Length: 322
Image (cartoon, rainbow, N blue to C red; front, top):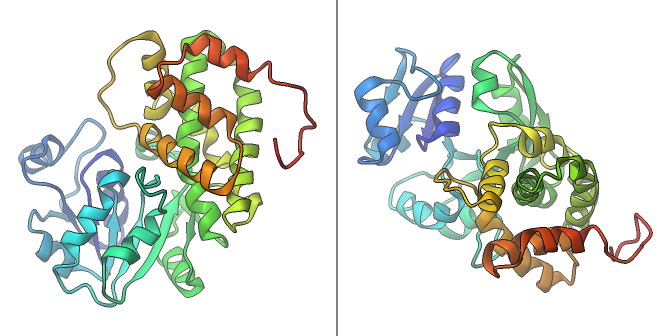
């Protein structure tokens, strides 16, 4: 079977290697980008080496023609413009697998809906999200992830074809909850990094409980199943995002608090803007997300904001408006 992976960052390159274990894979990356140029010259990056059977294909049209299964792993905020570019080519009937987490910051649109907005051809769309770091997978440490879509047949097809002993794929049943949960966990990851930076790491247990609760309320208000917040896409990904040294969102939050530069992609920094938009649109209070937004964009004092968060008025734990 042929698979194409679009995106040559850390996760996209790993997925190309993962799929090449059983499939013929073409990996596309943006010419001139440091990540892809290194792969073209050395066939390796800081995390892995490319197997001989994996083809690097810098021509987007050829990469799209290579396969009926198209994996996309790029920055969420660039997805719309990238799909407009894809729409120039014939991709009718292909299955697009979004292995990325985020919400469009300006519109609050979920990623699967952006694909449908911009690729004006008949295509199948699903998301593949959940816990796991490249470093752990390359060391042979397995994990579980979830595939979700509006089309149940697409979910079953992708799970059946691509589940393995390294990544066990589960069948999703709530595309809204899966996408919102996956994106929002990066915001909670930034909050966890802020706690680490302030020496308050022991509060991360409370952060996990309350973070999942506020995200569940948003999912419910948007028409999804609030239990999705407690599944693999959100709570199931907390260990990899709130605690791991490999987590770019957690590290971004810690570096931001301590005033140190951090240049790697932290999707949560853009996602929190979308969450603020959705929070207002659906009338859902999201105190943790608001804290992250205020610290990042309103110059709020981190320690004061964290103190206010954890000294809020006493409420019942599972009342819907808290």
